[in-house]
Image (cartoon, rainbow over all chains, first blue to last red):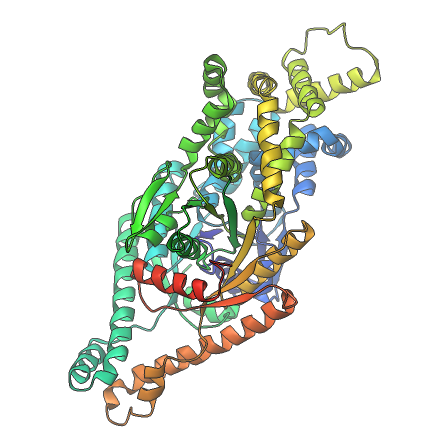
Length: 277
Length: 362
């Protein structure tokens, strides 16, 4: 299960919550972090029971991938240790994405539980997932091409993986999420399997809004409250419209997680996700 | 006279781009010719300014003040950059036709950072601006931008590059003997060459060899750029501004960035705490005592009291943590949280707050 979305929307929290919910139901889950420096595993905090966490170390993953291609760990280590080789490999970012995804593949193969991957933020996530097919078009044959094909077949194939997109109700973020979904569809041929709308503010009722407007006319000191309520109502309505349209178009399920105004615990988020499979 | 550079860094979703635009507006109001460049592939800068932006710098007028903004797009800027680097039209065409370039140049996650290095330097030296603000991509990528010049400079050092080219050539033509190279080193090179050829395949290795080969003649041009950017990163006039927000993960990101700046011996100019709530708004304090008059609005008032209380608490935790992090040496500026979606209103308020804190003029 790949979890992605715009930076700062709570991707890591949602990834941790999904892993938490999975472990609660099926006894175990694996949480993999690619670039987030332990953010997702930190989100788990005290609620980490049954969830294994893995961080992808670049050099180790590189040696692993080359080792598998050559069927020799020793040779792989020798190549990776070459200084000139290191410089070249560090400066070519596609190598980084490939070996990280290959590592996700070996983790998935070894694990007998569902694997949740906390992907980098929006623009980069599409780049990440696009690398294997782009590299395959360029490489065509040989062990490196075989690795790309294995990643595509075992990790990215539609029937082997799910894509969770996290967003918030803020207009700018919702607009970017729409763009991300279009990119995913056009460049990768994928639709998100689940759309999580995080930090949804309390939605004022129509009655409240009418009441606040009425009172404001009589007494101006209530005007700021009416304005705040109108703003919140509009925000939630707009976001819901934009995202429901998006969900409706692609047949994606939409889950809302309410705003708590603090860092939520995984179970506080997972209760909202639990109803979905 | 070259322009001063301000690098805006911060984790995702903290309002980096909006803050960059507000800072730009502040500079422009103070009479400086200002350009805001965003590296973030997202369209936030255009949204923050409430305009359409292109890969070329274009003027934006806000309340009668003019500033410039540009938003390089992925594919377009890679091609523009290649066109700049390769002056020879034939070489340019060969690079554009190269299989590796065609398939992979657009897939590289670090490509925006790399290109921004070239573009920003070009703008700084153009003489058209007094201030250039660089809005970076979230967290780690911002630091990649600082490392890229040196990293690529090392890669293009004569030895590494020649090694790579000869290696790729060897691998691409495995049956050809090279009588001019003997000894253990050549033998080792050949072994590794064979290995790499076996790994990535013959067709691909020829493309790789060709692409690396193209870089040899333009190495000096590239290294000149790298050196200029390195100097710029370390210049006294360059400011590093860390943007954060009152949430655990945003502060973690800020801590990480402050650490990374320090490890590069770069001093942050300021830490900006966006979306902070110093105290609940006065209207709410006044109304919370009067819910008896309007029972139907009691729930709404209570919800806002709870919200502002929680956000105020978050703000204080954030200020404490940031104070401890930067050892109180770096000025911390709290920017207010705004309950509006009006881009211009947000810009005006934030730029006024930055101006008061003397970040703009100081």
